[in-house]
Length: 183
Image (cartoon, rainbow, N blue to C red; front, side):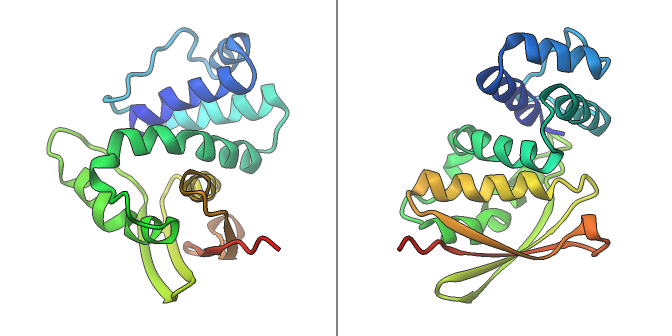
């Protein structure tokens, strides 16, 4: 897992709870005192251990915690990888272009073993984008949080209709993303 995500999780826990909660999560995960550097890769087992401890310490369901974390982390990711993002893109255009413009360029870097999830996106019509998410990490709740964060960042609230989920035995997650109607 890319260090920016783990460093972001630390920042999220401290922001949402406090520094003691982060220390407790690290201790519970068996990673007491470990530092996370944004440009370094870390074993997925550490992510799983920190998430499990975070769920236990915060008494928050895993999906809820991951979604909130995804929304929290989105601004940092855009700041870091914004060179691949056209500021003129709407929220749906940004979502539709993540795989082509961001993940593909990250996979191409020879200096890192970064393995973002595989995303397929296509426009259903002018108001709906279908995202097919596939990853051995099965962090689809984190992806949903990132999608919500994109909507917040662009000032365009988004709705997500989950049509399939790996946690329900499906081979991948299928999300239909649209602009949220604000009546």
